[in-house]
Each structure stands twice: as structure tokens, then as C-alpha cells.
Image (cartoon, rainbow, N blue to C red):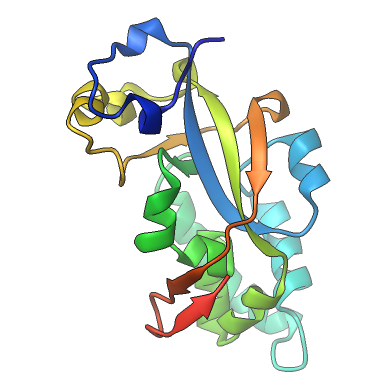
Length: 194
């Protein structure tokens, strides 16, 4: 396995064809690290998303019926975007500066659903903010995500570079870390300690 780490290669000329994998990071809120280490990273299916919604969002203010009512149209919207993917970024800095909502609330879908239900803050109490470092096979990444990447690496422009893949196999999870520090909540503009 020949792995490209863009943070180490920044400012140099690279050829993607010299590598089999690229380091990328997935941000989320982890409840049980072992789940990721044994199953890998997969996008939600309708069934898994609904089970998670009940588990994470149902409570005194939110009933299963309310979840069902908001879930269906939101899932249809997600389905309209095409095949679901696992999203990753090439540097953790972007998560801390521009996309910390993944660390604060977890999945984009669950965040949107919780927002519609008026209980998004509840997600901040579930799990711990985490980065999952992956060695993503370049063969799994659609060419549209790789276009211009060699130039971006040379010109140190990868801080906001993201990729999307169908899944990440467990053997491609290299590390799980738990960031600390202060981030700005993108919805309330309050400073939040991770």
C-alpha cells in the first residue's frame, strides 16, 4: 500500500498514479469505536437512519410520530441527490475551522432532522467528537473528486478538499482520535469546547 498524506506532501509535485491510497478524515460523534473498527464506515440506509433517529431523537418533546412525519420528506430529498456516500476531508483543519458541525452534531442527515424537530442540541450529548483517519483507496474515488488534486497539493490548497466514497472498509481505518480545543458553533456562533 502506497499512501499519500497531503499534509506531508504539501508544496511538492506529486503524481496520484504513484499511490494506491490517500489519507482522509471523517468527522463524527462516536459512541462505540469498536463499531467502526469492525464494520468500517457506511452511509445510512433508510432503515438504519430511521432506527438511529428513534434512538437519538425520541424523547419527552419528540415522539416517534413526529420523527416519522419529518423523516419521510427529508429522506426523499437525500435520495434525490443520488447514491449516498461517506464524506471525508483531506485535512482535519477544515473540520475545526469551517465544518465543525460534524464534530458537534454528527451526521448531516441526523443534524438536519434534529433541526426540523427542534432538538438539535440533544445530538451534542451523544457520543464524543472524533476524527476517523482512513487510507482511502484511490480506485474507490470518482475521478471528479481527484481532478486538480495534484495541483492543489503543489500549491498547498487542500485544506478544504473533500472526497466521497461508497464506504470505508475496516482495514482502511488507521486511527481514531478525539480532538480538543474550542470551535465556533456555525449555527449559534458561540464558542464550544470539544
